[in-house]
Length: 79
Image (cartoon, rainbow, N blue to C red):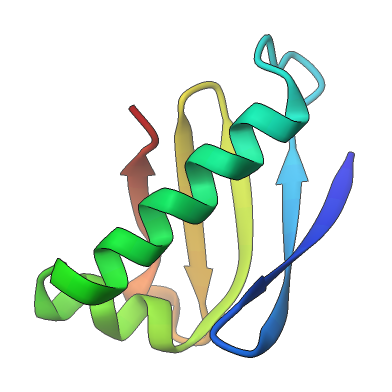
């Protein structure tokens, strides 16, 4: 399943695995809150990844953040 979220005035696709046990709406709320928090108070490497974010993949309770540079791809816990 694929959804689009607005993050930093861009639309970013979010891909969900088929075995997601959480509701999609709850996961999207957690993701949005976590991204907003991390863009404000995260470390430099995380901020660099978020600035060039191209897609997000949700696997269980983790969000895999894919950026333009493959070296900047990170996993982020939603809980």
